[in-house]
Image (cartoon, rainbow, N blue to C red; front, side, top):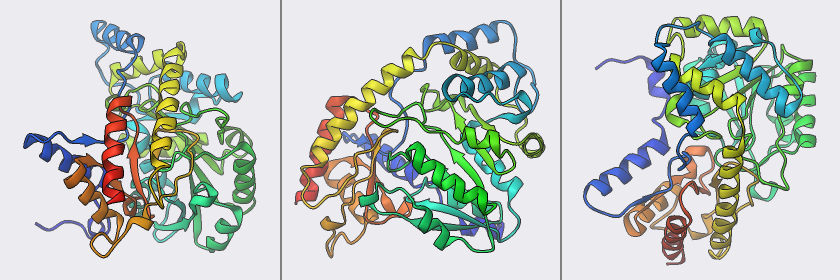
Length: 390
């Protein structure tokens, strides 16, 4: 069947593909453990579900304004005011079907054909393909595990060309879990603003940061330079609401109007009663988030202890999210020369599903999520370690 040429330039999601392979093996009766998908293993908080149920009972089931119901847009502004001291007005906020749609719409609204987007690598798998779908050119900027996979101003300046339009930042990072400090973030933002490079800051994991690391947001830079910055966030990770598809963005009001135009012609509004649940999440207590954060930190420490015993493997200690991204290239051989081959071997021999680092722009590494219980995590990593040591 004939499809558009632009589809030939993009790849299916590697994380979902690996998870699908794991599901096939499970269907064959094999005890596969999947550490491939980035999804909290906790249920959505009760008060959030109760708010959505109440909205259903009140028949709040019709179309809503495309950029979100007013009380949810205000709640988003209140969230940033609560945690970062900057309260964006309603007209600077848009609510979309997950943070993914906010990102997609931003690239569509901002890019002209061929304009370049700097993407520090390793990166979340969807960034380059979203840029390609929007007609832009993704430009990976490599980083090193010795630097916690964090990009430097010098590397960005080297990669910038007259065609550079956007810089994508993601902190804490998927796939590495590493975080920029406020000082590091400020230095990058100074560089970007001074060179008129628009910054898209993906902060979806900002509530999952572990001491001594501290959350750092670009919302203050948005307040000073709204024409140069957009901040993207959502409820999937911090409130275990992956299936609810609630993401939001803060941008210049004129850009929000452009995003609303795109959304209005594609998906229209987010699910009505899910928005009511999101209001409850953002305006209620964050004790549940603190509970998840404590559990993820313990699992991070458990996973790091095991990974550190793998010979020749290097892995930065992540300050947030729920991923490890170890450099396992010392384990490559003629039979397993790259991350994809190694992940296939691990799945077949250890029955553990991981994601190859090549999907994230760094073939030296593999990614796994520690969003599973302690016992499952221990069994999975010990099985992976046996394959690597073999």
